[in-house]
Length: 191
Image 1 (cartoon, rainbow, N blue to C red):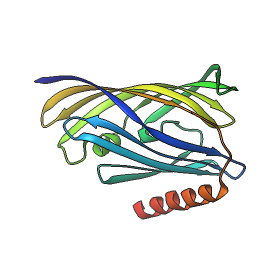
Image 2: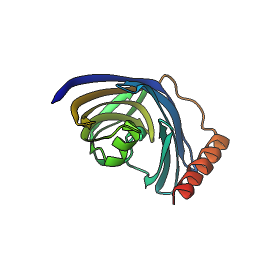
Image 3: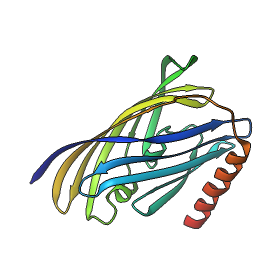
């Protein structure tokens, strides 16, 4: 039995900082995920050397990962197998950056986090475009397509994600240290 198709919109905010010692980001996104209703996804990340420490939480479950510093810009999709290719130049807020295309596949862990206590499984893929200047994400947009089975019922879900910087500000070294410590602590707690 096929339940049908669902198109979802994700809204929220994020802060990105890029500095001489490392980068950081944090934010919250909300999407109305049937049958759960509104689901808040919170994330924080910080880089140190060639590694990014990421923590994302949804439905009371958190996932901590350590990934290469140049991996997917869409942190809430951690657990994906990502390829990233330079596609040209882009411009936003007066900055000329590099446009990247990202493609990836969602892991079973991502579905477990999204579905929470529901009995289900799924497969999915995403394609996104990211405009970056000096490591700062200025814009990002993408489409996630998921085929999910919940309690034996098939459902196709399409999620459109759009993120646009509204301003560029100064790097906050204290916030960087705080986020790095929190993200590293989450890694140790999962080990």
